[in-house]
Amino acid sequence: MPGKLGRTAEQRQALLRNQASELLWYGKITTTKAKAKELQSYVEKIITKAIRVYDDNIEFDVVSTDKKGKEVTSKSVKDSPKKLAVRRQLIGKLRDLQEVKPFNEKKSEFKARTADIQHPLMEKLFNEIAPKYAQRAEELGQGGGYTRIYTLGQRRGDGAEEAIIELV
Image 1 (cartoon, one colour):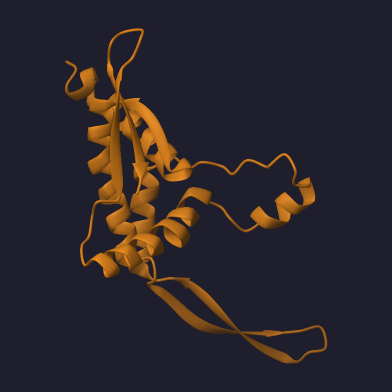
Image 2 (image 1 turned 135 degrees about the vertical axis):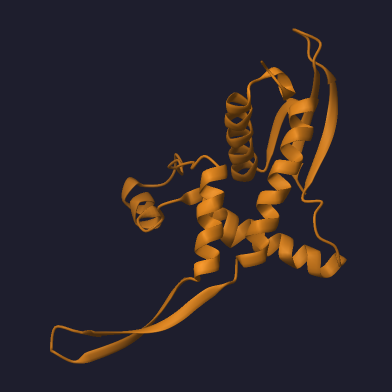
């Protein structure tokens, strides 16, 4: 028996997952008004989770030996257990998008730039989106309100109310 949005729970989750991933990757998508309203709360919860832990890292020293036998100490940074848990939760709620090589970039440059990135959408969420909204929340003194919905009117084919949902 179909529920919200005229879909089963499994289909609705897949739809929200795909649309949330596209919205976070591109910053703006066009969809129906009902889907946009459903998507808004889904994405806002994801961004809120990312904001809470985006700067929660552990720094430690790594001691290794070089070719001449000298011990070399270098700093390394990794996610804290709390941040790792949130990252894994969000991987479950989003579809991982792969970065596309721009037309004017050489293949070798693209490979060098994306070599150590396993989950590009997660990297974008924790390194670009979360810091931006954390700073915004600090300046305005409020959390939430990360997305905006514009209604466009009715679609020609079936008369469904269309909307644009975008990150603010």
